[in-house]
Image 1: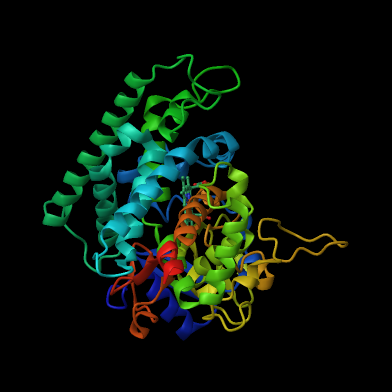
Image 2: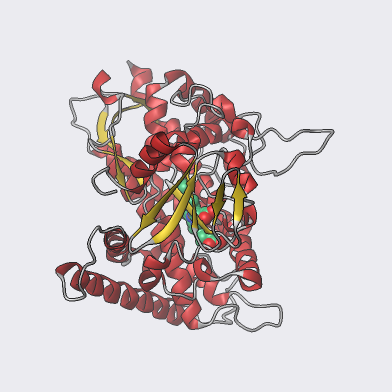
Length: 463
Ligand code: HEM
């Protein structure tokens, strides 16, 4: 697996060699069955499977066992409802808009400031720029403006720990507990757990519970919201230990998905027609101002379609896991109870049976689709992107799909809307059109960065 560049690329090769259903053994003999055809995933009732535990066991030391990722059944249902109402809720996202607008503006000013005075445009390595901005926005979102400042090392250590744990899990040889890798693992985990405790303490002492300024959802950032959340009987929804593990789950949710920004902007630089269409839409909806309401983001349908198309092609994560809860027969095969079901999203998103000319960037594919609905009704057949509910799964599927998808898409819309309002984006040279990918953290990362030329629109008009 390592020789092939990682799990995502390994799965691509596995399916190319063995067809739509293929099995492999990860680590010390856990059986996994990978299925890259949406119709077959439907036949194993993938939407109804909820247990991810075994597939993600290797992250338990990092994420803790009490976060939503490791709950199931009725407990998971209650937790997901709580998370869902916070993350996709109007009060939370709307309350974040002023802070996000000013973070994005100060990043854009920084990028323009990087410009050489003689030049008329800024040349930017946007992979890194997007990563820094996404990190900053997520720090503010998770911990609030002040505490967010101090969380950079935590976010960095978290990323390193995920990579290390993944390396250890898929290592061809068992690593011994006194090896350098294990010592590094212990160091990172102890730092991360202490930092999370420190941030929780800082939030509790900053905003004691019951303080009058609390809105229904606390005072804005997600950590305050988790601490302030109440059950129906008025008691805290999360114990302190659960808050700790939910924060880590949140870090796992947001970490390393800035590709939604960098890959989409690269596609828009490669496709000036799509870029202009997205810009026209932003100009009409925002009228030259920063967005002040959630509706101003949601109304950008074309930009939204560009984000989805980019998630399909390259910006999404690579692998979804579920545990099979009973034996399932598929044709000549029996998939045994307890095995891990793997859905390789990259392979599914490039399956030409569902996506004609899969490597082409065509946002229009998403414009008249209705991705959130499932099933059909006879009067109005549901139009799924790719023609099948499981053909587009960058945010997973069924009972355990991503809770942050609306938040992620709205945040990305906000950032790209600001960029399109202020800049025209071009490729510095033809050589920058083709990205070369390597696998990093279960998703595809461009090996040479993403180089873009950003021309301020005001400057352009003066020329
Ligand atoms: C482009 C950005 C993102 C992508 C591509 C993404 C993708 C995913 C995927 C593939 C899963 C697993 C779904 C499954 O097993 O079916 C997941 C789960 C999850 N995501 Fe996201 N995610 C993104 C952003 C976020 C953000 C911003 C948050 C939080 C603010 C978040 C919170 C979560 C949580 C809490 C889960 C676990 C849900 C559960 O266990 O029930 N995600 N995400």
